[in-house]
Image 1 (spheres, rainbow, N blue to C red):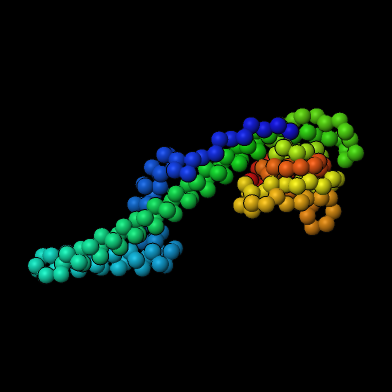
Image 2 (cartoon, rainbow, N blue to C red):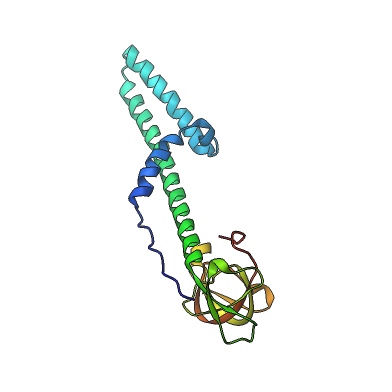
Length: 201
């Protein structure tokens, strides 16, 4: 199975940052802020301190400058928290889309039986539950499935975030594999368990 590895997004992708800036303002909606009690409380205090500092400024109170600074810092805190959350969501969505694209672009080596050595190369999107595929070092697993034969080291970091590769082998509790993960070493035969659109990705 061959695959063209999609370009990974930069840490500060321009499109994600622009959308995150817009979302950070939209997330000031109290219904959205209420999902995060700490930021909701900070926003409520920011509103109250803004009203109090406005009142003090109109009345000419001597400490109105301090209240204005407190209000500004509270608003900066709320906006920055919303911005950071929006960036994380944007990067997560971009990575998920990239994984879905790589999975659909992957080629699979379809087998007739577990013992078969002759494989037919097909697009991963054509695989159905019950199909057998051979995966070897460097290949991307074309779909969710169970290892029927062999043992291999699998890099699941794109899915789980785990940095160390894991062992997948036939039988036992370590036989399940996820589409979109990469074989690091050895060779396995996988029986696909999910039709397109029903998999983990």
